[in-house]
Length: 211
Length: 211
Image (cartoon, rainbow over all chains, first blue to last red):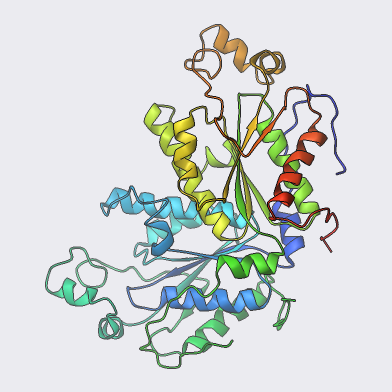
């Protein structure tokens, strides 16, 4: 320990471990990767596959998605417009803490409204928020329909279902657009990884940093 | 990449990067360290000094405290009993995500009620929540009074101030009690580090893991 105030009256609670030092320890920078797109467009699949690739390169990662957020932090939120907004706000704020902690944080949420996505983006310093539009047509998504949600929406059993009875606003200016309707998963992962390398978050072509 | 489903119809979004794999990559286990005690008892100072020590040992760490939580994630909460409960609940849930992300997470909050602390503890698997009671007498804390809060509380300008006009319930069975009233900061840090080593979270006596 280099610092050791000996007087017990000293008031001293500065955070000496900064994001910069964490990034240095990790050997890569942190950022918030925000995957947006229709239900069944492949957001979560892509986010988890990118995470796997990053982890194999020795990067510190975490995926925020419905599974770990809706049952925990946001378990007291419903699906009203206000609650949806608060849901994304909290996810953004948690992402901010995780990015500060040095983690490449991946969030996979439909997040259909431009304004809501911009609100989350505004929480971050410029360059930290990377919007990735998972572009698969409604037809492709509806054919996939892994949980039968589109079928239920078509029958009117689910209200305000994005793409059927509620709008999806295509990102105006995302950092990356991936054709998750026809690309292979591997190709989509590569595009994200290449973006991160171009932006200097991770080393380019470094595929074996894990010891 | 070892996994590469080529069909675009495959629904696949398992989380393959687990806490266990993250801990393996990090070279240490994760946990939630919960520092509780009176205002000015030294919770935040101790948490940050422990973080510094852990970081120098190459550990991944993050401190949650009023500074980064009240202005962000919990900026829409006030100080009513309900809001205080929700404040701690959210901190607990964020800690849970961070621990899952492989981070040794340190939280420094007065958290005066046993029931509230137990509620946060119950969010975690057994052994993941480590309660550290920062024990400094009310006299010592009031003498320190770095922000003049005790003085204001004595004048009745702050209502429900812990230790003056609201109770502090001493932890019944904390994992560690540190005398932050008379110990030096260095001694207090050592006690926490030793506890983490005894519990196998970090390597014992390993002081130079950072490369």
